[in-house]
Length: 542
Ligand SMILES: *[C@@H]1O[C@H](CO)[C@@H](O)[C@H](O)[C@H]1NC(C)=O
Ligand SMILES: *[C@@H]1O[C@H](CO)[C@@H](O)[C@H](O)[C@H]1NC(C)=O
Ligand SMILES: *[C@@H]1O[C@H](CO)[C@@H](O)[C@H](O)[C@H]1NC(C)=O
Ligand SMILES: *[C@@H]1O[C@H](CO)[C@@H](O)[C@H](O)[C@H]1NC(C)=O
Ligand SMILES: *[C@@H]1O[C@H](CO)[C@@H](O)[C@H](O)[C@H]1NC(C)=O
Ligand SMILES: *[C@@H]1O[C@H](CO)[C@@H](O)[C@H](O)[C@H]1NC(C)=O
Image 1 (cartoon, helix red, strand yellow):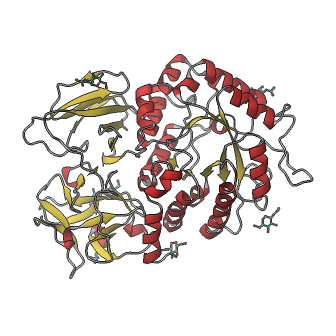
Image 2 (cartoon, helix red, strand yellow):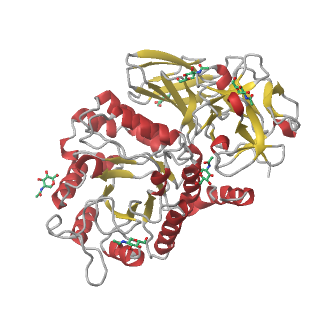
């Protein structure tokens, strides 16, 4: 286990300094065969997919990666120890395929495994890391997805040894591979409900690569349900927003753009949510067969722009109540994204205030906004208080909100604070004094704003600050002091802790829904929270 000191060091090390040398400034876009074809792969599938992407506009829209998944090699390595492609599947060979793709403007990516067998039972890379890296380089490959099946003994420490070794090998290459790490996926959803190892792995993967395949596989083509799986991967992603930085991306898995169990509305929703997350946009579908409607969705340049925004922020939850999820994030030009998911079995409408979308409350009403519907491109400058979204069942609406000059409005990190082990929301009591962890209901008492001075206040009681009493350890609300006392100052860390100004104490789930401060541990279920994007950088007490 890490000590308090080492996790503080880790939080600092995982900060923006890494982004500067990242190989991947914005999330990757492209194709992978797995969810659509699984082990039914061959050379023709990849050449026909690339040809189709070049002619149907997907390549021009930014989808420039062709990635091969499991089941491509022979079962035996060559005499010199190198991996060999299966010549029945790839008669012209990988170097030929690599140059075919490169000539048409694509990057070429491949799959291997950290253990000694892949998930499909083909040779894994354990003990052959240098040889395999050299082979991939020779074949013109620049992207490696390293899966985590068959790693023994099964422990977070063993995964760390192997993935950090791969990092060292890749780092020594003349052109380092983009490194997609599946390690965290092997630690999510612990059967005992203990997330410690998952959090621990998520803390270190940013030090070694560019992408975290963090949770369950997205439903494959033959799965009999798909919407529930999309929502599961979406939900897992909302638990990890704190880890994403420009250059390091949480990967909730493929866009299943021709899954037979998804409606067009549901496929659009997956795309819109993944765009809002700045998640990888890797399509797993039979691309030559995509219909015109779906191609238009995947090529929507307004949504791609928020996915590829240089800030690369992952939208975070503003509210959630079982019917609606509302998310938002900032864009590099100062605009806000507002994303609204209707989980209900019927069409419905929802009003979301500009304050909830992340702007400071405008008491004068002078601030004007330009609200653009990113599906249609239609914009509206007549609204002053917020946005009313009409959203079909299982649909997602996404808006880009630009403040127009005149009001002097500013962006404040705004939204839910929730425990990522229990999904319980930090809730201001109606008395304006007590605080608890309760079911998420989207009430004003569950929408929190993070001030640049370390203060945390719900929009229900804007003059009351979240505070910790050093004697009792109980957390509650009190009138904000002009200059916040240390009891009213908080600092959020990449590890998910909310550090209190009361030295070395962290926000913790107490008994019976109470909220307390306790000595900070590392990766404890009771101390890991998600907060609005931007709250990581608002206030520094160190
Ligand atoms: C290649 O794979 C695709 C997808 O599974 C399949 O439809 C096609 O028949 C295969 N072609 C060859 C030449 O094996
Ligand atoms: C797999 O790797 C382990 C070490 O992690 C080794 O002990 C075992 O013999 C290997 N199995 C095979 C089939 O190579
Ligand atoms: C949770 O898992 C970690 C790492 O495996 C372990 O050290 C810790 O004791 C576990 N906590 C509980 C409450 O079981
Ligand atoms: C509002 O935004 C749209 C694009 O999102 C733009 O075309 C339009 O000019 C903007 N309107 C104003 C008044 O700025
Ligand atoms: C919270 O939600 C759970 C599960 O939906 C429910 O059983 C419980 O009664 C709710 N608690 C309150 C206080 O509403
Ligand atoms: C929590 O609630 C239960 C049931 O109401 C009660 O028996 C217990 O004493 C409470 N625990 C604390 C620490 O308040």
